[in-house]
Amino acid sequence: MRHLLVHLESPLMAFGGETVDHFGVTRRFPAASMLTGIFANALGWRRTDGTKHQHLQDRLVFAARVDHEPGSRWYLRDFQTASLRHNDRGWTTRGIPEQRKGGTGTYKSPHIRYRDYLADMVVTVALRLEPAAECPDVDDLADALQHPARPLFIGRKPCLPSAALFEGITDAESAPAALLGWPLSNTTTPEHPITGTEGIRLIWSAHESPSTITPTREYQITDQRNWDTSGLHGGSRTVCEGRVPRAEFPPTAAGSDYGSR
Image 1 (tube, rainbow, N blue to C red):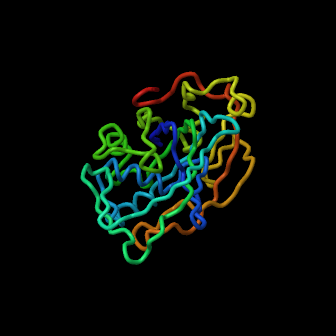
Image 2: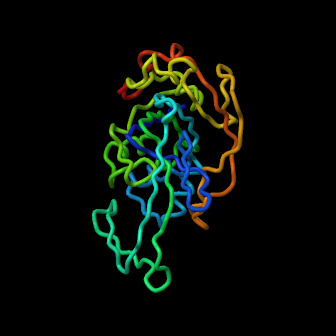
């Protein structure tokens, strides 16, 4: 099966988790809804295209790998305050100002919230679409990443990629197998306290567990959005997490249509 490899690298990025009150937390791995949003943005879809978003998310089968993480200081917490005035104008990815009515007359205090970000992380995602022959297909997503309809960001608008998102296309029996057969990013160093000693961290859907990896944990996550109804996150899926020694990853990609970065 053909899998698309996506390279996520940025000084700051966010993989949103369950938000409680005003705390916008982040996971260490991408969410299905975030990947759906990246591709939808690259394809030029609008947020109102809920049915298209939902169908794309339902077709996603993916695994993710942390190629680099900076030890104990892997995240940054941003304390934000914002007082929205009537007809505030903000930047959008469409290249035109966005007008917001704010809270004049109903809410006179500033909005206060916390937002967590991943710092200095590099993550590789392997994904396929099921059914594979429907539109958009893997090649359409690859083309969209290389020629996006709008500027792309990783999780939140300030998180602009510092490297190309398109990594390559490879054949593999599953998404985690695609990651096991794909070389690590050049930013991964053997002396790193996390990725060097304990191995490379991976996450994958429980129904795709490869026999070559022993999961260190299995748990439920809520990372899918109800795009065509409420717009909120709901439901859950079971994922596995494990580590693989650096030496088990190949130095060059095998079976790739486009080659390694």
